[in-house]
Image 1 (cartoon, rainbow, N blue to C red):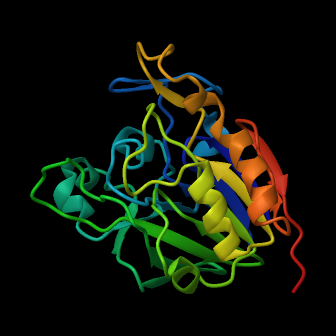
Image 2: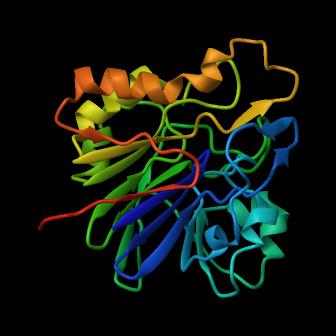
Length: 255
């Protein structure tokens, strides 16, 4: 099984002869955010059999990036997403399935189980349409947990179940993280609860608001290294791999 981190929450997972991409975001700029590290993902990143969208925020559900996926790609989105984001309904080339926590979807030799996340899943802060924020557990030769965006919650380990690899958000795109997010410390505590064989920090060090370079810049640069440091204390048995943008990790899984 191989995992490639393209930046932010976008990863390619290759397992059981199936390519899965998480929260595809291929933009150099998104509203007030600019990509500050790592090149925009190349055409190789667009290849996928399955795409997973964790919630409706624009840096996770980005219709122009989804439009770059090959025709026929299976796309799992939170229940209610096409109603809340009309641009999704124009992506007729994709096979869109709405899901909610507890659902299971089989794609090729993979089984995808939808799990809850603790995050505001609405497209707009005061929008009328609500959709759940989701995580996904992808099981093939390995079991991979993609957390999307989430806060720490009491029954996280029970909801997620045993996994081999955890892709955990450890930062954000601004100088402050509100409720419903994991920073490096909370992500390290989540890692101790989940106890996977390996982990990769994501959702940090890629996008940063224009004009905020001098405002708490350590919040942009530091979360990955801070997560590695804290995870070594809270979950020393877990192998943590801090990837560079576009870097690939091969994980051997023994059953």
